Image 1 (cartoon, rainbow over the protein chains, first blue to last red):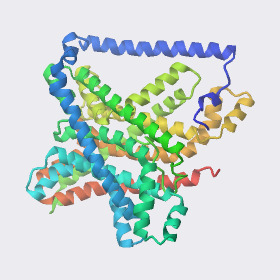
Image 2: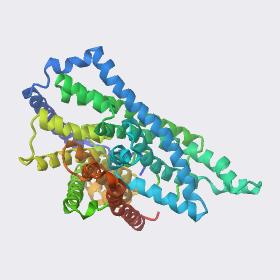
Image 3: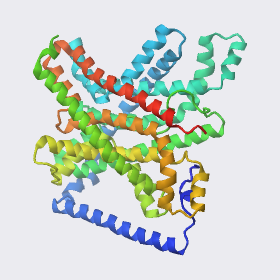
Image 4: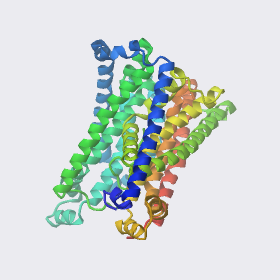
Length: 293
Length: 224
């Protein structure tokens, strides 16, 4: 069906349908209001609306000493992990597409393994396990970034592989025809075209990265959840209020990333660079699956 | 190197994975029920329902699951006093299931909506032409056909759910990731085998599951 499903599933409402829809609207609306009222009363009974709990959020110091540094840690970890994930993704996508078995099989094993292991397990291993091997403490920032890189790099590797496969075969044939080597065709013809077509997927993967940095608080990385919710909540006794504020920040950040990915997708489609129907396993659609958190 | 000859450690490992299985099963049921409801709301003729579904998806899809699970414990349970069971572990388990369900439901809803989009418009038009109502069109004509196209995205959603279940460890449930952390801290000489056993278990279960869903999706796909 077209993107416009809603207009197809039901007729233009006649008088009876209009009455029914209005009735449904009113019933559901009242139900929703009752639920909200009940939540409000619950909060009220526990004193969650008390001024002192919400007051910290109108004071600059709360923002400058907790929330903004936490947000900065979240964004910087996501950005650094994104750069590494891109490199990891390209290397392993090309490795998996290689004609040499000694290269493609291990690449496939690595990608499949890291996609199947929960990110938290990975971070725990890097943070608590690696120090036993190296005798060096592992900074939480790097534990978060490395964990994110292995996982999201593998996800991106699969996306790139689908993208490279989706480049019309005529492109690589033309490359071979003018005497390019396989390596040159991959480097100069296929990867640049695939990368451009994959831009929207890369941006929507950023949403996953931003959400996953929140796991860092479990190993003591002071990101938004740790600074903005745990610390603020502990200092002012307003964990519910702090969690709501932090959630709003996450939602604004991620919704704008999703919107940006949508804009990019429309642009690539308009300029005719979008990949054709992709071959191989499930194509990476924008935000279709909760790649983890 | 004989970490896994100690019966207490094996116990920790088994208990951890049992929690993951229980969380995944209960979370999947909750997310599926909620997700189908949300998807029906999002394609319904009633604007308030559509708005509610859209709001739900946008709120929960863009919030980290870690924050949601955290809120379930410190918000719902500590601050607001929701108690789902007297037993501390069972209580944490159900709080975790609530968090996993509301989060995953948003993704289930989107997967189903994308499946609805694969059904040719003519099907719904034909249903309306013979006088079916919205609910009949949806439940008898569109959803059964959409179900085939939904297998692959739903499969990835549930695989992600199984991995996400580890996050419930943050609110004090001894699931696999917490179990692994404890074993590593107690047996610094066997870090690699411990990791390989825990990660390997996930890989051995989830990789074939992924291929199974892929195969199933291919088999059920409507060849248009």
